[in-house]
Length: 490
Ligand SMILES: *Cc1c(COP(=O)(O)O)cnc(C)c1O
Image (cartoon, rainbow, N blue to C red):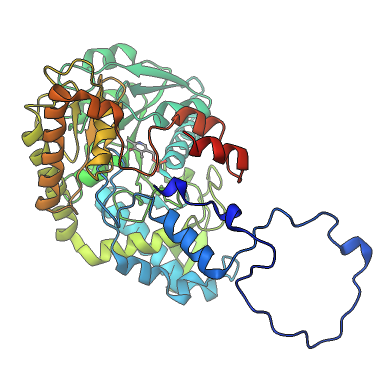
């Protein structure tokens, strides 16, 4: 087991080194006392180059990644990131551009941003796009601040409530609360959609807007979407579209035409800029002409002489991010859109939806579907296997690791008990889907016949079940000989 390998600090010994420095060929001088380090460097391990290389290579192999296997994390859209994007993002003109070099020396980069603004607007049916936000959650925050600014600009001061369905991603209510507004939760109906009666009852002159993901977090299309938007607008509110599930409708439906006023694009989900491990991401936003003056700057426009220039919209809510957003992510998303074109993007969504329904249809006899309907790009099942009373979704997820699969999203959305949220994406082959389905079916049999295998899982991973809450609350980020000894002794 990897954990029983000596830690890099234990391999350290005085005098080991990885480089040979050239002989000193300039005169030695004394540095002033106040510039000299006062404490010892004794926290630095001393190792050979080969030991360091093996250490990092070994721990890198403990990582799950899209380059080593499928990651069916529902809502996260963990699809293949084409290597071409990496090559383009590394072109010196992009990678070595300095953010302060000025518009005149940045025409290529600005053109790319201008075109990406245009493409995203076209794909989603919006008038204006800002590439500033660094993540979906920051795009949401941008949108809700823009809603508030819009209402206040019209002298409409009492709109302090944001409607959020109870199936929503946690960032939606968090966003509304951070923007200083009140979250009003909406019920879902038996079909897994927004409960229309509840919506009608909660709309009021205090409604600033509504946040909705479509398809929603149950992987289901909100088929009342046009009516929902009509009702919210009639009450004077605005519609925010959480675009995390845009992978399901590319080239098929345009949120701007469905009635949304503002949305974010998770470029790191739908548009294959790599994600995992915390970023960088990009949560570009699009909106209607009425909201465009409030967008964060800088945006890119064409000057009368045909050159590209940065500007800040007149009533902008301000910057969301330093400089030009996460530019490297913009290069990758532009490349993706240009590579696929209109038909390719539509095919992405058609295949993603087909793959999710294939998995759904082949598993729902063993894992009941949260709502028995055709799904979009992801499906929500329940880890409630008939005849396996002591087994929970967590056990199923851990057992999948023993079968070599990264588990899907679990216990989300919160309204589904024992939820298993599976998003195969369009980039996985039928063979991979079949292997996953076979593993899930085998685990369902084990859950009834040999449940201890599930309770003990994972047994084939570098670590066993972790205390995830403690790991998040009290992370040990530095080498600690004592903690390491305890971990090793289990
Ligand atoms: C991922 C996700 C978000 C948040 O996006 P980040 O880029 O992770 O900040 C919001 N809503 C839904 C439905 C998501 O899946």
